[in-house]
Image (cartoon, rainbow, N blue to C red; front, side, top):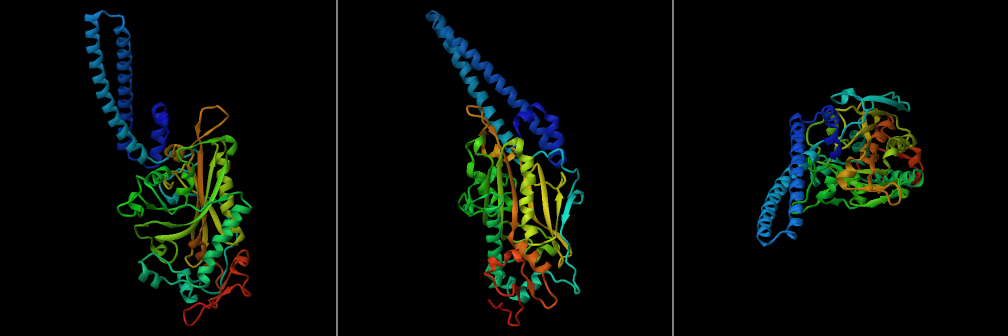
Length: 433
């Protein structure tokens, strides 16, 4: 949520920032009208209360006849105050509804642009594999290997769900364990196993509600939502709390399934593991002091990059432009892995600094010094990484002409030290395990 003080004292900063995000001009103007009306009502209420206090002091000094008049005047003012308070409450509710729908203001270093075509490549790593044959997309490879069964997944649930079998399920589990071990043992994160269902207040805290309600799955007749990412429960761990500066930064990581409607059509991305209604992800969250948050963004990015480096997957880092930023983010880097079967780079991680946007919605503060006034901290999160997309990248990048797949060395231990570290196609369609 945008700082109300900033809206009040620097309206042009808010206007310019939100225009870059494509926010509704009508909403913006209505917001500033409401803020003016709120301030006027607050001033009226304060003046009336001051007048009532003065009259109440006069009551004890007045004689009987005058006292009765003053009491009547006090009652009349109290009625007016009640009316102003009701109107102010209505304006506050209307103001809050608009503020909760407004995106974060972009950081000054974010590239300008309307859409993904204006994103800027920051750096690239690794060599793209060269093939003596036309590389296949991961869904064809997975089906030939008998480790990915989209037809049976559709039968069980519906489209955009996956069914990993045998070595495919083991590969998925290996990636989860590898990523969690890397982030906890080497990067300093504390592992968390959070709920996969959260309430509306939790969803509102990280910015999923109210704006994206139609993109989420909700359990009917309850206030429970399926999480779209572990960012939601991890960031809300300290909602409505005041932390101590000595305890920051707090670094959390978690593996969870994630659930998203993914409405719309995405061409090639509609097939295979790229856009699923249910997918697995290892998430990274940092709660930090404001002055440290942009150095933490760079460190968060390096943590996610390290996963790709250890898997020897070619990737690039892209800074998102103002028009492509996520709702809550002030600045975002995407990590895009090279997918030779798709002949394209595909997002595999998104690392963002939300500054105090989520902390305000979560009422999450820290005390800079003992006895000091609490301030809002900054929150960051990134995928470390998306599991299904990482499986897809491994299948496409390490495929051989005979249909076998070489497993990256970093996963050998997690694949139970199999002798060949290869996945083999099977004529029966059932992967040997």
